[in-house]
Length: 211
Image (cartoon, rainbow, N blue to C red; front, side, top):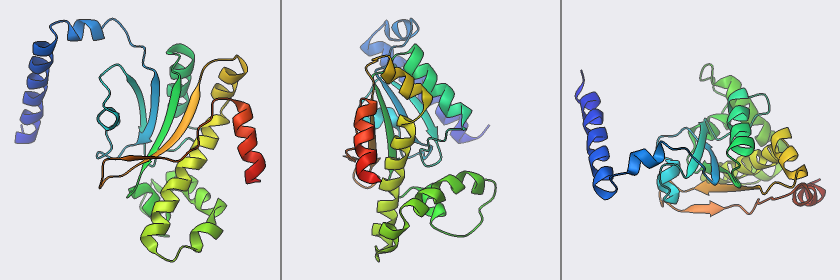
């Protein structure tokens, strides 16, 4: 076996030993169940680790990741995670977190074909189409790229709010807030995009302004 494979096995053993040194009941307590307050919908990028970014411990964050942190209404994987998080785990917050330098967003800015992922990127290209006037007016390519990342997160939060799962939770009076962030790979800090909704009324106010 490769050195890397053996190394990650050793890392696991070391992590277990260190965790048990701090708390002998650590894994026994984890095995009893989970009640995380947060669902994180993020990018699959290996440089964007959900727990580490917010300093969360195992059991504190329910996580779904895909390319470019998309919320697509036909994606049964994402919807299943969302449904379980909202209706079973009763999370109180759902966070969509993108990141600057996202490869999926960058690919969507180009017309090149990169394989089967083109089908996924099609949804990201739709976001560009919605906001092409603002984006095309930004001459600096890096600034345009960064703004595209932000706008994609904002659109995913809107789409998240319009899912039947979130809508149903709000109609039942369930405590549930949704948010949009962007993570800076070169700084470690997150930017709150101020798309924070806790009811359908909040969302309606935004849509009235937007359209």
